[in-house]
Amino acid sequence: MTDLPAASVPTAPQGDWLGSPYLRFSRDGSFAHLVVDRPEARNALTNAMYFGIRYASKRVDSETELDGLLITGTGDVFIPGGDLGRRTPDSWMDFSVLGGDALPFDTLRQSVKPVVCAVNGICQGGGFMIALCSDVAVAAESATFRVPELFRGIADLYYAQMLPRIVGPIRTRDLMFTGRTLTAREAVDWGLIARVVPDEELLDTATEVLRQCATTAPDARLQTKRVLDAHMGLYDRIGMAASIRGPEFVEGWQAFSERRAPEWVSPDLRRPGRL
Image (tube, rainbow, N blue to C red; front, side, top):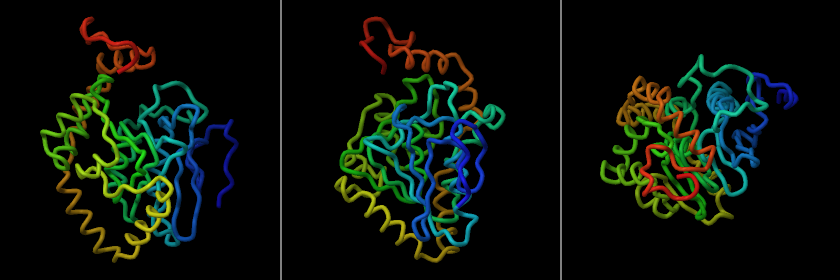
């Protein structure tokens, strides 16, 4: 295993170092484990963390001695989405030059080796998309799921593309327009995740699912993934990029950081705290 750089010196991914002190990459036999570990920010992903997850999937694909990747979080949070953009100890480059290419979603959809998510708690925003783009997502009974992007001023056209193909347009509108929170049982009933298990059985079950996936024929599995990927289709990347550059995104994240309702919410509809 490659020696990890000091957390105080931001550096790009190299070897088993994923470019962020908030991501832990380890090996357990022929499987790689990636743990999102940023409890002081409730596991919110920095740009470097998003890129590190992408890098981890590519690294597993490239190593013959690795057969699959398991992704999980710490405590009662899987991944709540992205960070608010504060400068962090893993800011080793200006990710604006990469844009969407820094994100792991398409890479997970195209991964050669199987990727299993063990969803241990709160799962929303980019974290929920990571679970949707993995091969199998197993959730603890205490896990919850939410799509809050419209409350942040983001026209998340990736969700708008994926969700109707998974749960249909009626439930997609319910999830995206109301920001409702689903329990793990509801998420599995809707077909958003594959399995739900008692919290104490999560890692063992997810590891067994990964083992089962890894014993399938690699080329046949990849061809099956190709058809499934085509079914999901491509989202409007230009439209979503324009949304993230727009004024609603700026106001949405400002309101989130200030724990208030955005200005587009009518005064009589506002409630204390963030949406």
